[in-house]
Amino acid sequence: MWNRKIVSWTAVSVAFLVSVISCGSKSGGGEANVEEKRPKSEVQVPAFNADSAYQFIQAQADFGPRVPNTAAHGACGDYLAAQLERFGAQVYNQQADLMAFDNTLLKARNIIGAYNPDSRKRVMLCAHWDSRPFADYDKDPAKQRKPILGVNDGASGVGVLLEVARQLQQQAPAIGIDILFFDAEDYGTPAFHKGEYKENTWCLGSQYWGRVPHVSNYNARYGILLDMVGGKGATFYQELFSKRTAGKQMKKIWDAAHQLGFGQYFPKRDGTEVTDDHVYVYQLQKIPCVDIINYDPEGDTGFGDFWHTSGDTMEVIDRATLQAVGQTLLYVIYHEE
Ligand code: AHN
Ligand code: ZN
Image (cartoon, rainbow, N blue to C red; front, side, top):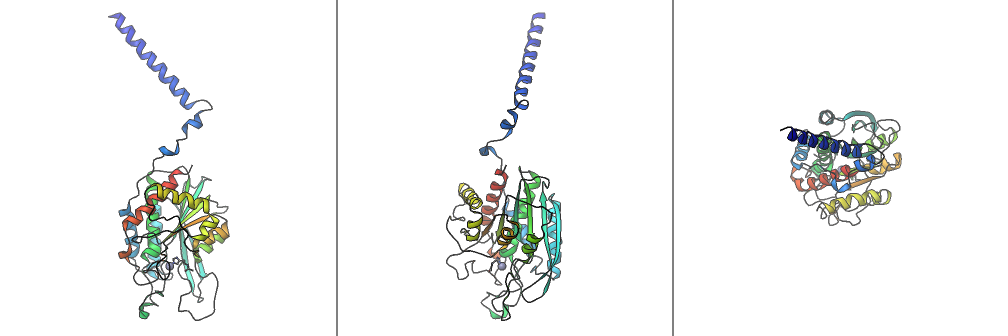
């Protein structure tokens, strides 16, 4: 009777001692920091939900064309800021009056959501949220001066990033993330314009942000821009300005896509050079930025038959493409340390 009690208490105290020792070797001493870093293979990457992204795209499309100086544009801007707020970001609204190619003054608004704002290790994710006031590549001349719905060209990138925001709230990555919705990207000089030529008429919102970032002394390791990332059978050939100025980051993204089985969407082949928001992020803030943009080597414009036409509607969107882009993005973000 007594013997058994002594034996069992001894067993308990030995077990306690072992646990103290093993705890001590984990959390104490100089090795702790080394041990706490998970090997990259063990990083848990959340699952991107393409249905959710699709709904965020539909919600934007439901406002109608989001052309600056219209009521739909204002309402959609409020919606986007509220969504970022709801998903736990610190939200900045940058209002600016920007001059268009035809001297129209655009009431523009960049919308920025910051996660882990105090971290100096940052990656910026961007997309433009405005839609084009003209369908200048429409086959029907009667439609060419009408605004487009901009579902792939505009809403797709924003929809993917809203789903990323939702994931960031549920599980924080090791770094800070800024989601930037640039305005007035797509108000560039239309094909039918006969007046005086003006430079830099595209990407007015990112040009403004490049001159006046949402916080002073802003910096990020690099950026990723999403443009037309929802089209069925989309191919993201390697855009050449990105390849030249952010080649290392581009390789990391394309390698991730291939590792995840999305290689057919991300050919490791040269596309063309595109004047897009990433150009101004790099030129004005010296932040390398990779443009993931649909490029169709067969088509007339290079961007797909829907591009700057009345056909840029929900019908061009395929959840499988959203999944490929969104999951690749999450993979890259959650592997940063
Ligand atoms: C030009 O056509 C000069 N740039 C294309 C940028 C763009 C427009 N992306 C979407 N719409
Ligand atoms: Zn466009």
